[in-house]
Image (cartoon, rainbow, N blue to C red):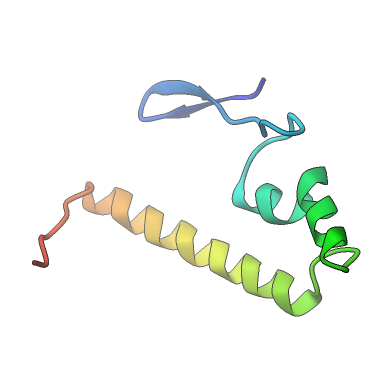
Length: 79
């Protein structure tokens, strides 16, 4: 079990499938389960274009999450 602290609460951040440190990278690219899924799709690993896209997407999501944390989670209603 790997513990992380989120908003002052310790949580298990280990992958439920393999016990590795869970992250979007792990979930989509590195977990043995993810690699098996890619193999079932006919790829030994994600094609480089797909892998670059996923890494770019993850960086964008991390940036959005960081900005949201700075704003203090203030949400402006849109409708």
